[in-house]
Image 1 (tube, helix red, strand yellow):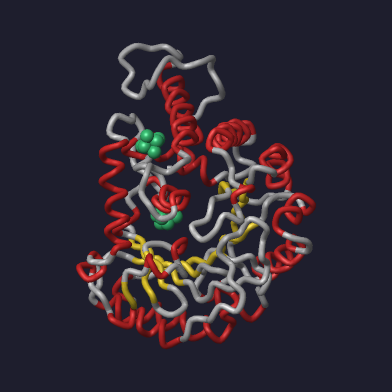
Image 2 (cartoon, protein in one colour):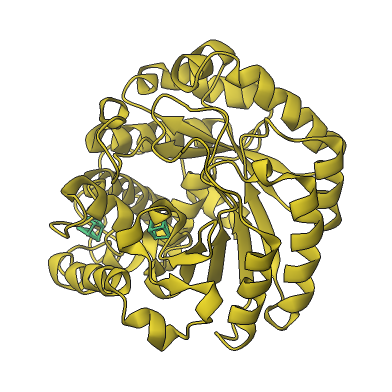
Length: 381
Ligand code: SF4
Ligand code: SF4
């Protein structure tokens, strides 16, 4: 089973993007003491292989000394869990010193870039593009693998063609992220991507991906296709994340996911108390996450995609309702659109006809044939 511990060294971030809801100025930085407590907490917590992802805020604000100490502590202290590492950063604070420390542990990097410079800086802020690209070059020169997450907002989705071409022409891997509403305030809501637009965007990217097979990697499409084909989600959004993902905030508080960090009502415990799973299960946040799971079993039981969707992301479901559980992930419409599209295309590829009877994958009669999808699925499996 996947076991994921997100470490949030700080909620601070120097970039303050227009639609971001998670940067807090003057946020404290995690101490090495807290990392030592993480190691002690995990000694008897569970046996599954762990991935530690440094996330933020901006995790590189913690500085080179933090990573020089934290990485060996985690690698050796949690060696019984065969730890892997990852880091999500805007790369502004990347230095050759930091890059060489991260390269020692072969840490893959996820960064954020929303497309060509003008478009990116319009929604992320003046100067963002150049600072990120500067960090990207340092990371690349030190042998680090960098993949970009592109946030599509209600504004930037109008330029989806330009954005796709930018990633294609620059040889960059693309992972799409729809702009989300916030649990904290409604400052980011004008940027939020509508679910149907998100669905259309995913279908557009599927087409573009197939047209440009071998020239670009679109991670979401790979994950979605693999999920439909194997009938199991392959990323957290499409599995029950509640028992496998935890996040540790700068002060050692434990949350269900990085998206909740900094909100006291979602604290499940503290690494300083070395809680067991049973201890965490008594927290309100744990109960809310499990209520979501039960809710999905009930609400989505008639949905043909439930096995590889699992109601989507619980944060997305909770965020628009002030922390109350009133529905599944509001991107349900988008998920249904893309799952149907992929299902229909698999059917077409398998059966060679859009309207074969007795087809186990069939959701409803398919439309005119589109480019084959099986080569994409097999390429990634
Ligand atoms: S709450 Fe959402 S983002 Fe966080 S681990 Fe779960 S599915 Fe992933
Ligand atoms: S597509 Fe919608 S109805 Fe189906 S499992 Fe996902 S959230 Fe539930």
